[in-house]
Length: 106
Image (cartoon, rainbow, N blue to C red; front, side, top):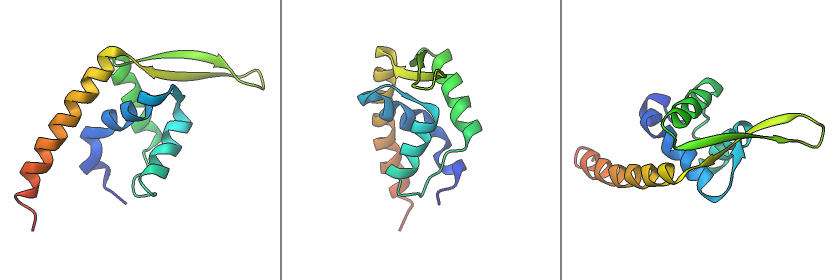
């Protein structure tokens, strides 16, 4: 498992990546993170929803409700154009971060 301290600065990037292809909701996003990381990273619910709030506040994502088959409303999220630009910036930042950290890893 990866320490949440190590990955904390990239939770937003991970969430935005998952929203690039299609809109989604919290549980599905959490499940996809676990699956894509082969179970090496499990995002805590509080971490996920605090990231959603931060992304919403910065207008990187927007939320909306959909009625599910059993009449329940579920909150979905989708990435905005501003979010797509932010995601690209974070990807460039990650490349530089890897380059620097790799200089100190043997």
